[in-house]
Length: 435
Image (cartoon, rainbow, N blue to C red):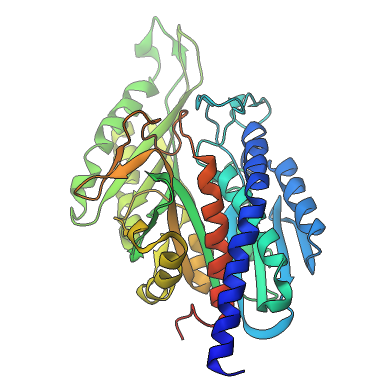
């Protein structure tokens, strides 16, 4: 096939992708609303996985693999023509232990009474319902042109992105270990995350877009005693307070040119109002913009906890768990992907953004196999003269992920479907590669 007919066919397929995305748009919204009303926590995504698997089977894919690393699902679509490339499209499926206050009529009222540490209200306060629905839509779109695809598409629905319970395995690393990408091996991974940014805008960052992360558990142990006689025991509370205060100085002990943060998000006590308990447990997270800083921050936090506890005659044990590498967008992949992104949403809507200290374990896929991870704006916003998102007058405002009021615009979901489909098709044609 000469160059001109090939270009003509590719243009025709891309136009068909857009038409098919419009046709499936209302179904995507329906899926998203169903998932939002029925969220499931990490490693508990059983009904979500069943919905996804049933849809993929209805498309007649070559394979639908289930039960991967818990409730992971991978659909395999082999194109009608041979080709050297395999693109993996990824969506995360789990929700958060956050009350749903977003104000929509499909808001979640789910409470998980059995989850470790619960009961917890459960909601999709991070937008994974959007990710899952958009990728289900993209599967429909790409399955419709399978005979004109050269190569293979993997639809990867990953559980436990927010992190499984500490006594369990799960997430992206577990999917890799379970062989989810062994046959065939991806030549590119693509995914996106919805964010509080203008609707339909795509943000990208060269380098570490998301930070390295680890979960930390600090157990401070004293000696239990009656609250009226603290001198007869060892109170772990003051030691825990000293650790919390000292954490605020750790950022000054590493280079100021590479941001880090240590956050304690949960304090767990065992006792009652008139008992000085035996232990206090601090649960938190470490984030480092530069992965090589992680070991030093962990060392300093461990030293701080142990010595602070000792000053109060208590002890502290520190565990660093669930390490996640940063999401790294290599410059060559960004360069390769920008033409597709700009064609789909318009050049003015593709914007370079700064790095964040958020994390996403899609890094286990993107860093290993190559590819690109971007953000998709889904809120009532515009960009000011400095390029920062600001609320649109009369809109719903800007609400960050993990906030109970987080929301996403349903009409933007079709843009996510188109992005998945076009990125996949362009990689399979060889137009989006680094070779």
